[in-house]
Length: 276
Image (cartoon, rainbow, N blue to C red; front, side, top):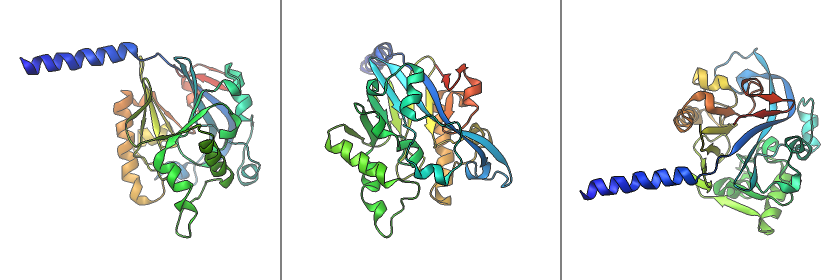
């Protein structure tokens, strides 16, 4: 009887939590195009000669009085010299297309510290910024030592991250499977950077926003890893993709980081795709 009562209590608690979880809307915002990218740089095992036109995007999650950005894009000039970037709109202007002013963004969740995902944190001056604790620790410290690895990390972004921390606007996420907002959980394990993270947004249905933990839908269909620090991480990335499918309930409800197909699979108006 005690076991039955405990089971019923857990079921009731889960049902209550499901009722209380906000119903968030999710929009993908494309702020630039990246033509002629090598598929092999994004999908392990793809033919080296194959090219794809990918995109730069971030994602807007709205609900429960919050305007949450998952990633922030970039705007620093050096990256325009190193990469082919077309049809660019600065992220703080791009978010206005979705009806949100930059100072109305309440929260920014950073998937990882690469220049094209963390490079716009200074454009949203009132937002609280969320990042994995180990990602923050490594890229504000050890990464810049002689034996560290800071490839793809902009030092100006790191300085901005430290400044935001001194202002009291930074929140450190303590590892895997952490609820950072009601109905939104952060997960780790893909190792695109030192401690990258992705999000599961509850709802009917649930979605996983993968960022660069899944570059393209093709990673999922081919069961191939995204680019990671080393070959030793490839198997872990494939395993993480399997977990994402379980969390989302379907591979069709995983949103990759750079795939232009998300702007074809979901209703799209200009630069905005309505995922849910």
